[in-house]
Length: 234
Image 1 (cartoon, rainbow, N blue to C red):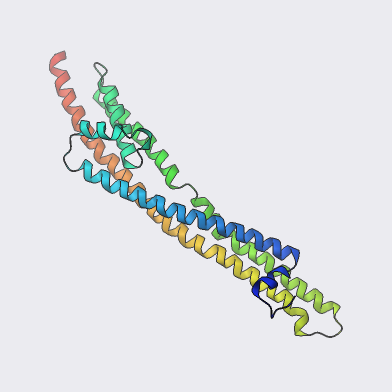
Image 2 (cartoon, rainbow, N blue to C red):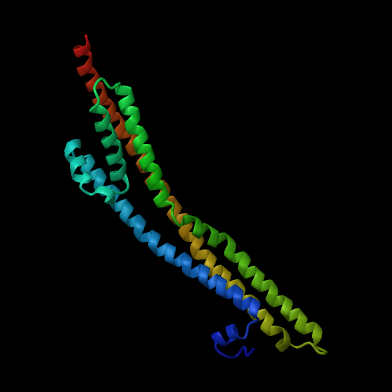
């Protein structure tokens, strides 16, 4: 292997095992960068949709008209809007039944919202385990290539009658390249995972807070419904 040549010549001259390690790390790195960019834009859209819905929800808009407007989006509703649609739809469905217990009315809406939150959390956390796995495994894959390169260096040194730097340099170069490639794959994945996990947790907290606030609104409507039912049954 000619160490004075271009970098790609060093890679081509590496042992098959180190080349396989580098190919795996390259594939892992490209996959993690694809997730990083995909998740970046997805979380931007999720935060923007949440902000827009909160502005509409707390602007004083009547819940029925907000429900009708968001309902036209159908399956395209995401985030907090999907949680609102699930909860209010169940609330309206149960309220249409005669002599429904207001407590059952509220608990049914809350169960629907919890189910919607679970689906949204699943979407938010998609691909994050890939970043976590890349960040934790890539250094060890690179370390394997490092050990293999150093082992080749000692084998070349042991077979030689006179030890020279030229005999051990190829294996050491392979080892250093494998180490660098492992870090190159791991560091961006770890940074992105930590950042995105924090953003996901913040969105989940906003969803949970909205469920509590919206449940209070539905509770008041359930209380008004109870007040209307009691005189009729008296």
